[in-house]
Image (cartoon, rainbow over all chains, first blue to last red; front, side, top):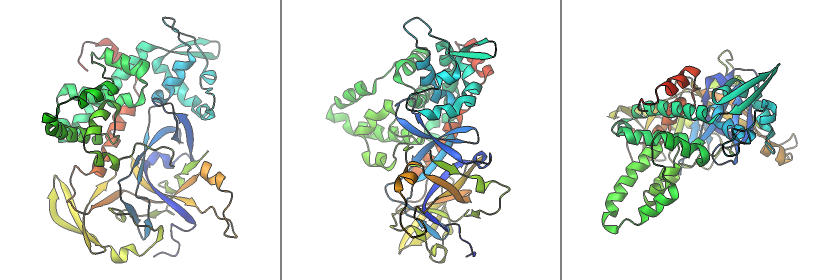
Length: 280
Length: 163
């Protein structure tokens, strides 16, 4: 053992996998509280070296870490991965344009848009918003001032890019995904994107745009329960493979699949907890 | 506001401990936090068994056989052991706890480039949850890579091309 040990003065430890680029920048990454784009709950994001990251939390029912000659009781694994700021800012820009019916709404300046009551941390994202939001907005310049208004057709095209990209990636993950037909892969891709979107209006618009039938998770649950007992075993089988498909994303309990997961192997589902971003 | 400071792990810094090869996730809860002579007692060996391209390793913990596998972290990522300084002051009394609870300051104390996870009853395989959780890195790359104007034009110009 070397004379100085890494755990000197440390009371608590956590294990994190994060982009290398987070080591640069010369100042600590900040934990910002922003509203989750789907649930609207205050959620912790990591803003490090100009990059916005989300934190996923992976924990098995039982586990601890050996970290060299040190034991850490908390066996969970945190993963920080870059998040496209457009997802996070979408609801904020949507609200700021004050769209009513067919009226496309108002053009506004960034500092106004990013003023979200109760969430001052959005102010940190000013230069990021300037760089990334033009792709989904119409802009107008008056003198040195720039005004932004979210544009639905641009948002839909942007979402379509996301779906295309995911759909290409999924079959490469493993053989279960590779064996899946194209339509199912598309549905999976949309439901993963849907983890970041409010059902109204975006997710419904996206389903519509792609010619998919929107399935309300609540209705689906009812349907599942009305299946007669005779085919229950068969159902269970498909549930567990569905469960696997869910797990592959590292994000269990996707809304559209929740109903099936409920009836299936519950114990496996408990091993994963949904991204608990408050923990850090 | 809390912070996570990884700067001690920057590549030009050599001060930080490298725990690569010594990061093990064991399949039981050990009710202890702190230093322990792990390397004296926990001695993993590689085995000949390979399932699905996953090479199994073997070790024993408290008389039980564990079977595990080592996962390399994806390119562009590193593992960090974060430490939170003790919130006791020089007299050993706890400082007002609200400050560290509301504004936790985590600092990279050690780094690593691979993780070994251990199963108790089963050989490691591609179906293990922790291996599958690593799919998240590929998925999030596809999902969060910025969309360029050219991508957008391609989608808008060819709406009839199947997605």
